[in-house]
Image (cartoon, rainbow, N blue to C red; front, top):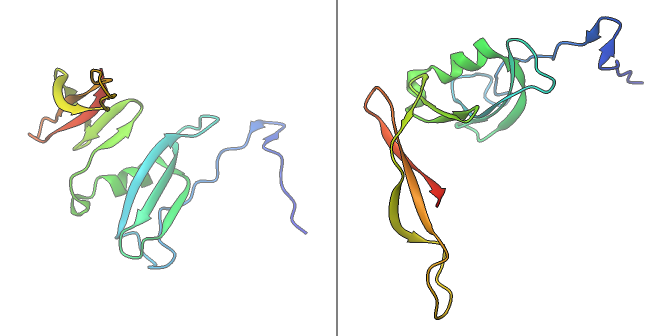
Length: 140
């Protein structure tokens, strides 16, 4: 028989059960790539909800973990450069990227028969202090 404890006790909400980031198939954290980092609900100090993939065996995991554990995986140089979207910010090299002006591109949503294009796909250029830059789409 399984007994589930209620989420709230006399002292208030229980702290989340944080787990280490680990691939159970490979038995290591060496090949992990974090896909998402989101705040826990309800908010918990020093804990986040993460989803990640093992790029060696293609295993997928999602659970709560501590911020230092997530940061240790994100800060590895061997995982390659990437962009993390968190809290509305795009982060590269551990800091928020600066955005440039949106630019008009020739990619469009579609042209109805005998009409004008429905809308153009604009892009926003993001710059990192390290020199990395990328463009992300947004609709005008």
